[in-house]
Image (cartoon, rainbow, N blue to C red; front, side):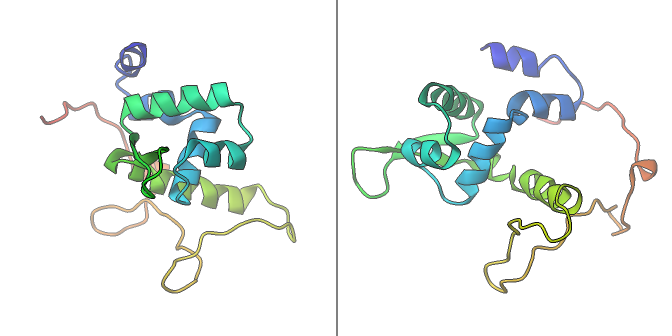
Length: 151
């Protein structure tokens, strides 16, 4: 598969992640899946995306392992796109992007959606990067090293 070849061309996890899910529509599809959208027609209605483009994006996400296709949960003839563990693991990325956007891309008094905890109906805590000891880290507190992935 051509996508797998592209993914294997970089030792940088950020570059591979962007190659895999860095497309605007891909992230919007995953975002909607977190809101329990599962059917092609629901994705199309919410996103306003052309059928051919949505078809290509969903096929790629299934091939990558972000979604799996299952029979509809209501017993109808429809198929549903269900997030896998890999897909559900994108949640902190989407939340982090949302929080960055809330902080920097809206003017004072401008309306926007916020993410609330279902149990408490309170805004989700801002995601931070922390050390193993709990210290909040900045880019200056970190460095990169190339390692081999364990089997």
